[in-house]
Every structure is written in structure tokens, then in C-alpha cells.
Image 1 (cartoon, rainbow, N blue to C red):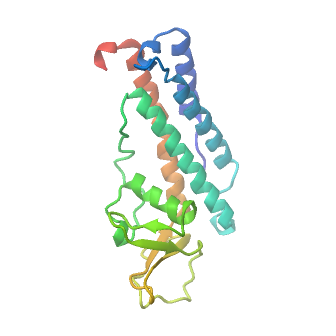
Image 2 (cartoon, rainbow, N blue to C red):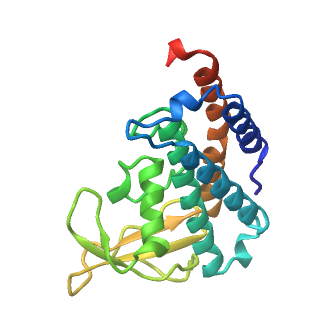
Image 3 (cartoon, helix red, strand yellow):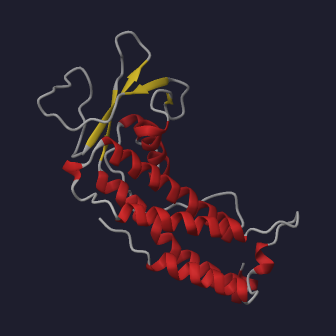
Length: 223
């Protein structure tokens, strides 16, 4: 698994060039005399760092991954999501974010999370697999859950009492309830390749950012 830096570096160069020639400065000014260029610079720098860190680890060897490797993967991809969202908000002058992909990446969602899009589902994975696993809220609910530690598939263990985990997965988390007998336990699967594919979709945003930059710089009437 590898993330290509070509689109990122092209965008970084074009953004610097358009700052130097002044073509986008008008667009980056804020009403309070602020300047939004540094938000883009920060997004570029952090995206570059994330890609370097992910590319220097061998996520193809899933069987050799430790829990710490998994947590770092999710941590870095979340930074990439936040960084590219920040750039998007500046370039499109909006507080909203775009739909990341027409193709559904996370295809093996438990029923409780089935209505979430890829962005929402990844944020749930982030919470469950490391951000705040001992204090979780169900989607659209105030019901509290508590996550176990990430575990490998173990086909010797049977889950007759609970809905089975569908499809293939590399790790899973058991989401406990606050009931005495742990009613309605949910098992959350995770595939490393899907998380990495999500990261790749985020990197692909830079090609769109370069095109958006061109519109800002040369076609003000189309904004």
C-alpha cells in the first residue's frame, strides 16, 4: 500500500506560485483583515508528513501489524482528513465539506452504523479504535458503549448470542453496553486495506484543489 505525493506536490507548488504572483491574494483575505493562506500551508505540511509516515510503514503485511501500528494508521489518516478538509473550506469559502467519493469504501458496517457515509464511519472507527474507546455514543443516540481492545479474527470463538461479523476483516472491536448482561453487543470489524483506500481518496483531493486554484486565479467570474 502506497500513497502517491504527485498531486499534493503539484498543488503545493501552484499555491505558492499563485501567492507570489498575487493572483489568489484577493480570495484569501478575510473580513476581519485576517489571511487564510496559512490554513492552507498547514494543511499541506501536515498532509505531506502523514503521507511520509504512512509510506514508510509496511501495511501490506497485515499479519505483522501490532495494535500500536493500527492506532497510528487511524491517527495519521484522521490528520489527513482534517488537513484536506481545512484546505477545502478555504478554497471553496465554506464551512461545509464535500462528499469524498461516490464509491462506498467501508462496505462491511454493522447494522447500527450502516447509514453512515465513509467520513462518518471512519470517525466512528477513530473513536472506537483509539480516540475515546471507553466513552462512546451510538449514532443518533445517547446510549453509551465501551470498546474492548482491538483483536484479531479468531474463528475458534463462537458468537452464537450475538450477530455474526460479516465479511473479511483484520481486526475487530467488541462494543459493550452498560447493561449487566451486555445486551445488544456490537462487533465492529476493520480492514486495513479499506482504511488505506480511504486515505488514498483524501490524497486524490489535491488534484481537485489544483483545478479549483486555477479557477480562483484566472476565472473570478466563475466563483
